[in-house]
Image 1 (tube, rainbow, N blue to C red):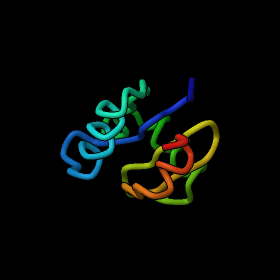
Image 2 (tube, rainbow, N blue to C red; image 1 turned 90 degrees about the horizontal axis):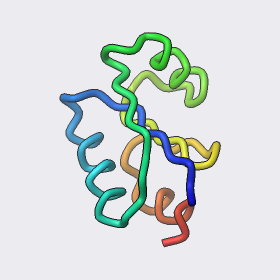
Image 3 (cartoon, rainbow, N blue to C red; image 1 turned 30 degrees about the horizontal axis):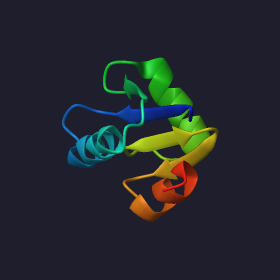
Image 4 (tube, rainbow, N blue to C red; image 1 turned 180 degrees about the horizontal axis):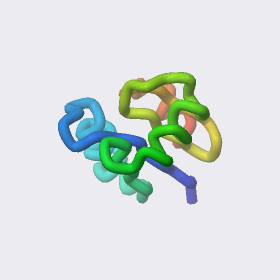
Length: 77
């Protein structure tokens, strides 16, 4: 089982696309709303070097944006 965290905001369309994609492929994930959690936002920036969302952490591997090819590779799809 993969350890997946999605750093997102409620208004981000790509965040919704990533979460829908993970659900469709039966992957569980932890969703962190960085719009309300400043500590998590700082953690996301430290991990990714980016302020934009979504940022996906898959077993310690960081994906910025909805990069389907990289996500598939990390998930073994």
